Structures are given as C-alpha cells and as structure tokens.
Image (tube, rainbow, N blue to C red; front, side, top):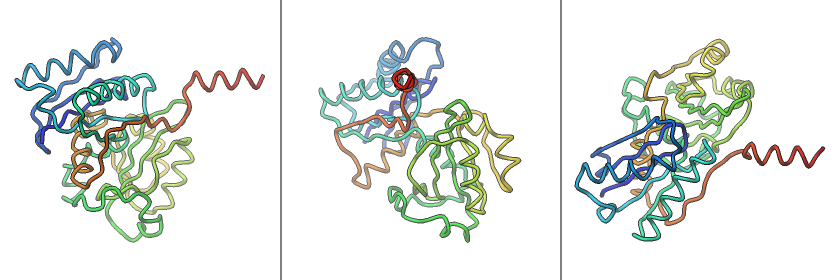
Length: 255
C-alpha cells in the first residue's frame, strides 16, 4: 500500500511516500516561505523523483495538529482537495502522536515493544503504570508563555490520557505522580529541558531530528491505524486551544 504523508503543523513542511512501513522518499523544507507556497512544489517533486502519481496513492496520512493554526489548515485543506478528486482513504494523526512515534525504533529505550492496542485511549490509569519499569513517552510542543501541548504514551504507544495543553509546571506535577522514567521528545522538551531534569528524578531526552516534525512518523502511525480499521474520508483539525486572534477578540469583548 502506497501512503502519502503530509505534515505542515510546525515550521518544517514535510512530505513522504511510504510502501506500507517502508520509506520510498521523504522531503522537507525549513524555508521561510509559507507552507502554502512550499507544500505543493514538495508534493510535485516527490512524485517526479519516484515516477509515481497521486493515482498510485492508496492512503493519505495528514497531521491534524496541534501546532501552527495556519499550517494545520493548509495541510488538511490540501489533503481534502486530493481526497475529493481521488476518493482516498484518509487517516488524521496528531503532531503529538507523530513526535512520539519518532522514537519507535530506539530499541534501547523502547525494547522492541509491540503496537498492540495502539488506539485504546485512556485504557489505563496512573496507578496501573507505577509498577512498571518501561518509560512513559511524553511528547511536548512549546505553546509559548510557559505552556505546552502534551501527549502521554506507554511503551506500546497507547494513550495514557487524552492529548491536552497546560502550563509546564502543571504537567510536571502530573508526571511526578507516575513515579517512573519519562522519555521526552519535541521542541517543548528542548525548551524546558533544564526545568524537567531538575524537577523529575528519571528523565530521558533525544537529540536533533527526532525532536522535529516528520511526515514519515505521521504516515507510519497512520498505517498502523489503517491496519486496525481506523480510517475515514474526513479530516478535522485538532487545536487544543484557541488561536491568538480568537483570544484577542475575547479580551476586547471583555473590556
């Protein structure tokens, strides 16, 4: 199955084509131009370089956020336009899920664990995790002003709780209740690394590319969802909080 992956949720615009879980090609751009200028040329380039076309795609995987409000809308709008023409099966994947999946192949941390029950969100509570040695995977996106978007996953990439947003200090208090190692990933992990290390007893951090958005991880996570029957033809953005424009408007109304 050929999968087209799209992630425009961050400053990086990234696209890929997979054959099931195998990467055929991946391209990304950190250009200062807007994603609306970058995305279609990148998609055109990956098809030219692989001698493939949209007609060869069987599944479309798109990042649905959280992240850049404008970027998320651009990616989803493009995916919807393709789906309207080609009637693709589509899978929406959160940027927080994608970041967590960036470390899937790190066998030293994850011990080659399986993907069973990947989508049973909230299947376990905090107390059920305190007796295990395997780390919690915490994906973090910096939401500015000491706030983060976060996702908590077990070693099998089950959601420990729903994806959410809160002040970093509030998240630290929550993580203390797990009493087990925490593996952090994402630009939020970089931004608050020293605070996390000083506040928690057992932490792991990743370097470089693993902290960045990856259409490959989005596509691989989507493929696993698809195999488990979790797909549709409708994509909806995941914002988790209101945009700055919406917050400013509400503040003016309150004055």
